[in-house]
Length: 382
Image 1: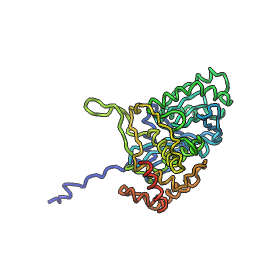
Image 2: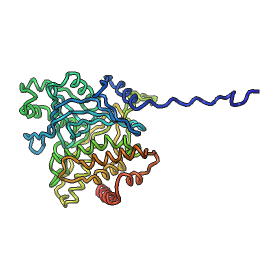
Image 3: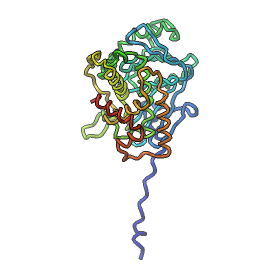
Image 4: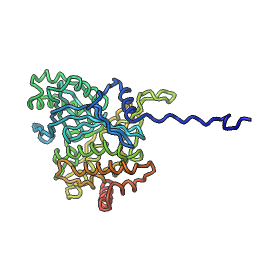
């Protein structure tokens, strides 16, 4: 008589999940305009236990400028160097992050953050409280610039205004071009921010010792760099973010929108910067200088899933920045880079678990002194 085990063979185990690199390639192929990321240097991938970071574009000798709101005729050259765009995909959730950098200056991309192409190799990026100009060199391959435009179309509120260069009649390699381009395009960028309910111009917390737009750019760089790395190394997990499905639905409740990935709103990054500025304003007894926030009632981006940090996620990242020595006169936070690297090394020998509590994460990423500081910061935020 045949045994019961012979009659009922054990079930076939489910196939293993695709490797992170395959999942990233699958994500890129499912975009409205499928992207074939070139192999080699422009396709470098960093794989961690909790996520993947992929470099999708690299261009040499780019120029990044800060266009000031307080003095509109002033342009500050932030960085000259290699331009890189990176994508991050978390392993255990649908969270994705996209950010750009020139040299060591980062800035985030979001579907509710306007970007306008003003010439063949030049772009303007509007973030709450900041306005950047990016100019790629004349030696940039047309395929590289085209790929950048396609990625910006996917990850930002992108518009193409290349006719501005023709109207101005000045080469995009001259600073005079940018003054005239700003005059024509800034109303479009301002309307784009207001459409999604973001403030325009200088931040209401940019007062007193915190009024420097260069300071805000440095903090935004830290925020973009930290968020990009926090998910893959396990500093943040699915308990630190909220995901909102804004895709349209049929009457039977089935989703119409394509893609399961969740894109960040720009407030993921601007809330970190605003919180730090607010903490410093209060700590330096400059609270009386705060301006009332005039934020219009906007609409949420629609047609895809959106993620944002919840209170525990924001508090976690603020603890890291405060522990890293967040100082009011610091253009680049090298201590933050060392802290991220230390977290990566810790992650490689102590893989994070999904059951890790918020207090355990705080102990893993901060010292006792920094924990006391973070409590004070949370009290201010509350």
